[in-house]
Length: 242
Image (cartoon, rainbow, N blue to C red):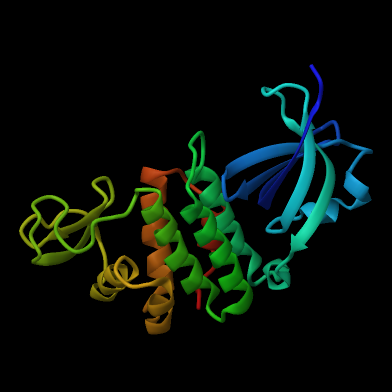
């Protein structure tokens, strides 16, 4: 069958180097996630750096059949966010990239997840509070994927007389009568309600009270409802976040 050349765009969210020397890149675009191979010795223009994590690229590729992995032939760098390579910022961007990678396994995503992801990277590149930006966008990505926690009424009985507990398995807070789940602070509960009702801009403007507590809850929630993120586990080993 004749090779089919195509052009597509996306943000690089994962790279994996094979023992052969070939590199597999995973990209997220407006129309979904796709993968392509960069062959050893035939790397586009000799500039594999164009395919660094978080770079926005346009790529030409071909497939011998629809079932074959795409092979890149040309890459054009559309944009890079320089602060994301900063050691103080990179771990947060990696968390969001791994999250969208896991959220889009074997499913077609709409434009909203892609747009939120791109917006989150821009926020990290420009903002002053990478931990808070990551937390807010992580919950918003989960919400967009249909995994939003219940934070305004009891996940068990629907009561609005809430206790300071979050049932990880059921995915939401519980009331004072049901009183079941992982203990959380009153401030964390207020933050969660703001995250899931206000715009991203307004949520970040009001700020979050305790990013460390947020990351602990987020880690537990993801481990149960999505999967454990290696990048988040590494990040939470840090003692404090801004």
